[in-house]
Image 1 (cartoon, rainbow, N blue to C red):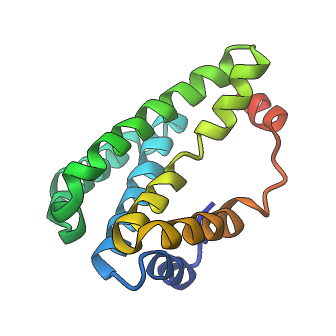
Image 2: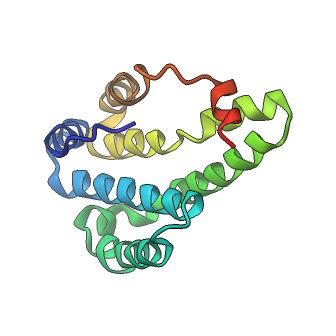
Length: 154
């Protein structure tokens, strides 16, 4: 999970993007879009408000981001893959098949691959590799959640 503290989040995003503010803003926007989408699926409260916020971000904020404008064609297949993975992860969780559930548990965190891709665009392979390790340590390593816990949520 990304840091909740706005300053810590900003520091992480800037570190992962090598100080590229538009790229950091792109990742922050994608994180907010993902959070809103998840809230719409999981919560009945404020659904219309969240849909409006989501649409506003996707249709008016994201398309104007300079990093997205420069690299959107390169990022589109990965963004599509992340959407597919998010949908499959939920289906796999509910499948009752332990192998699918394990893959679903991993696929649900696929958005971390977007951070790695952005790092690769900006700084090449070595930077992407270092960022992927940092994202794991920052966002996932502290979690005690196991596949069984995740499956039991719903």
